[in-house]
Image 1: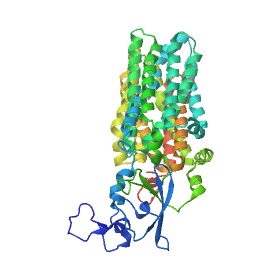
Image 2: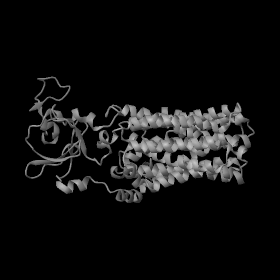
Image 3: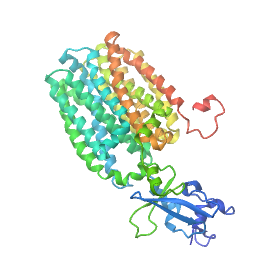
Image 4: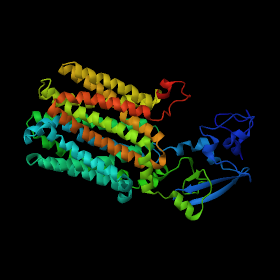
Length: 530
């Protein structure tokens, strides 16, 4: 059988056979047609016996073997340019992904509301319980303990829970319990708040890692990561505004969490339904397929998609062993990976600086700059800037200069804006520069996740991203606590030097990562890092 390459009129040239399309290097006198795939992306090399050996995995994960003679007649359905859409997980492949992305966006909005509210509520919490900065900061320590616990058990949690659907149910339930405790504890004692934030920390670590892993598998992942994390920023923008209005009208601060618990119940139902059956229709993209082409059925009567995987034929028990996963081994490999730790501490410093700034800027303006209760709207400006940055800047940065350079650029801009906030003693100027800092702080996280999926081996990506996410979330809890300790002894201005120190550390860690976006060999030190 022979076919004519797409876009070439019939009769204008001699048609190419399917095997010539698959192996263009064997026809030196004809143009190289690869449709974006190399020969190694399609099949393993032909052995000396003239037969190309491949392995076929059906959607039921049944190992088969097939021998394709080099002169075999191959169906037109396996031509690379007709397969490309099947290779990538997208918003419509599988079809349920659109619902999943929308459900994640709704959850991220609620998560943002959860993280953005404390900044506006801290003064009211301090007043009700008559506690100091260092004591009120224990709510973040409770969250950090929950994050760290999940990180330590990351290699076992998925096996214990079983499915993604159950992961979302458990995570949302932990959040709902947290919000219920805080809403009820408004007239009680302070320790239950710390317990509540501990449960919220566990839920956040579970769900954030699951969300990042799913989004990182999508085609154009930086677009969807930026969009979904922009919804986090939108939630964090809305919550200080709602909390400030409630406080101004004399409504008890704890009533804010009645809104949060209602939203989390809705998210639990939505995510549970959206990810029902996810193990089946997402199994290909979550598997360890570094060199696999996902092909449509060879005939209309076939019920399942077929994947042709490179490598030798493996039969019987050996095939099952090859496909089995050892959680302990994956955990060890992830812990021994320098890239995992560089990224984990990068996110630790990033989320710590982000949450500390959003959480303490209002208190700084009230206590140091003499602002009134309306200073709560400055926190709104910060989170609004973060939302705009993730929504409008993330994708262009990734597309035009790459994730590595994009992070370096916005990090340097953030340092400049925060320095100006610290140096200019004006409430209005602080509000403006904090909002601009939010714009440049926002893209860092989605760009980090985008790059991490390219430099972390796929076999350990789930465990590594869980560690990175959990440690990052713990940074979002520990750093605000340390800022509280510093504010107790030196003053609330310490949020600025701590932020600057963390961002400098982030840049150093980022430069230590492999520069996979460099297209030519480095001629000097500058090219090596940039």
